[in-house]
Image 1 (spheres, rainbow, N blue to C red):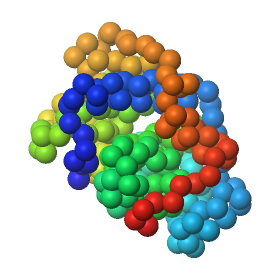
Image 2: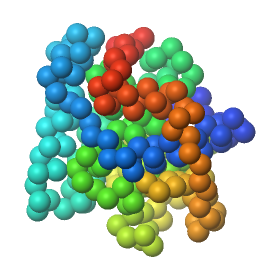
Image 3: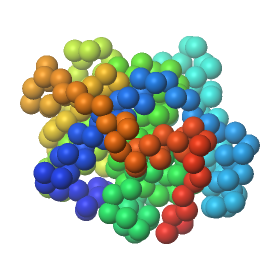
Image 4: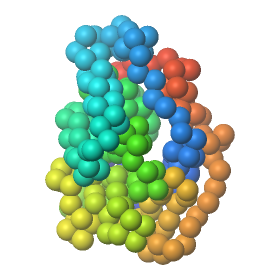
Length: 234
């Protein structure tokens, strides 16, 4: 399912634009995910042994895909999509006590809960860590015609002009965008910027990494500079 909190308001549009800019900047910096014994111990302390195993399994998945020079990118996509689609869908308000909380992949897996943006973020970082070119990846803000609500998915472009493949938690089969007539794209981004869906050649640009405390916290937590947050609903 998709989060009820999203609607196409002016505020939501601004949040989406800032989010796309900030996550693009992270992709360009080459920040590596920190999953070591200290991080796993912190996960276990807050969420228990099963949570530690979920995060460790994610680390093992990324390491295996990164080190296998013969693995096809299509298989990496399947691994990332399947792994995060196992997580329970839950609203931010119920899960974190906030209307709009951006969880890191570690927090999503540790708490075993998230929404469409958390799943898309998790898949994005997974593929970056397994050496997929960030220019091929765009988190895409769409409208679901089925639910008449906003939604987020991850799009993969094999080449710059190719039809993207969609990694989603509603329809969990990876399909070309032309087979997802239920989705209407609004914005998308790669590691180098943001594009309006109706004007794919028109690139929007902004530097918002320093102006978004939520995203700074995500970035710091992934780098091991900030503590994990404990979910309201574990």
